[in-house]
Length: 320
Image (cartoon, rainbow, N blue to C red; front, side, top):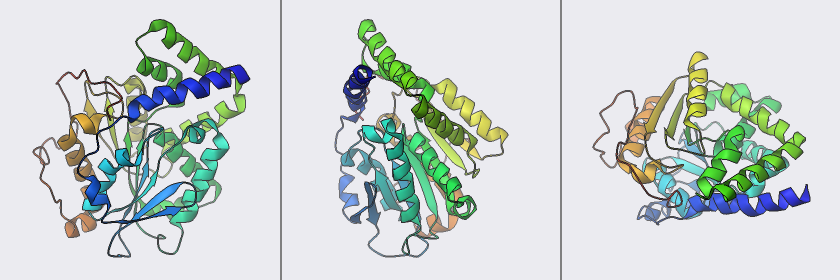
């Protein structure tokens, strides 16, 4: 077990960190107009310069080893539209140590019930493993008997390249290297670690089931790609169909060739136009008071919000 765990802790963060290289965009300046303060549980809360009792809050659950300047590309968009943000930058322990994930969920639930945050409309925006962490948040709401209270507050949820635990060994190995020998070693190492940790796998599967259930029936938008080797498009589409069968309002933006969590990088205008359209429909009063500050060429086309990127990309998955 120690041997497998040591390999896992060595290779898994290395492989995921390939996604973490990035260019810092000018939108970083927008974040500075908001006041940032730390919350318990490794969260960072960006408060608007002017307090408004009904101002929405976007819960941003990043991908593994994401950095502040990565998330700033997304938080700045929310801030431009008058939406505050609470950001978590997941570390390996948030995924590998289930108690760490549960603690994160408890801290988030507590924070959202604080006097200056309670009763505010909420948006959840999870990237990659952020979907797993969001499911832990839903499980904590269930355990605390707060599902009904938060169902009234959660206006929308967005998932960018959501990863299911069953696809992690294959997805990470494929994304990590083109070397077949090393790929097999990474996949087998991760799978062996998970197989040995039956208690951990049970929690992962419970979280996966909660994610697929969408118990609050929250309107959902999904960004995904047919070329994603980490977030399997077959699994993503199966989850989407399951949500629709339960009566959930689901819209999607899909691409043919964008790598894992790189849809915004490859098609920025489409990404934010679709995000704006989706959220405007769920928070019409807020967006009427905070109009879109930048026009996008596609913002009024494609009413089904089903985007396709036909240009083949050879960019490495680490340039997000």
